[in-house]
Image (cartoon, rainbow, N blue to C red):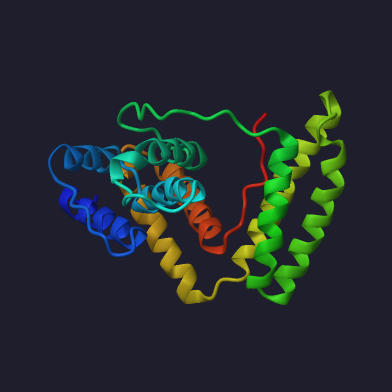
Length: 229
């Protein structure tokens, strides 16, 4: 497990880069706050993504007036940690108390997925780009009926999104070379390490595989197509 001081230095350095070199020290009560993330087992990759998420909203409001402080990012960090725990199947040592936002409607979810996949096409191989293009066409076709889908029709659409998500993730794995695969595998093992002692071998293996997929998705920029209704 990463030591609290080392964890806080990593957060401090990351936030400094997000603030274009403006360093805000993590000391005093803020040190205790961020150390609490480490104690709960929040992976640094998740914490960084939470900081990114807060900064994106902050920048969208217009020109910055002051540097972002890490304490402003906590709700995003803990909310994403909740999502991560559910995805990889581990329990937290305590209540994250993250404020959960209302999930998007299915049409809005599809709109965002289509936009992200369209942007992704320019950054991947021709083979993967072709697979993404086919997925975008399918999602675009489903978008028209998504708002009215009820009952069995909605269940069928949600099931198809789950299958399509898995297919795109499989295609993303094919993009990895051996070195990048090893790097993500090592990071996934490190992310699960705080929880490994209380998990069975099978559970640890499943959790590590799920953590690998989350890291791969972030590295590639692949959106989650699964929608929880």
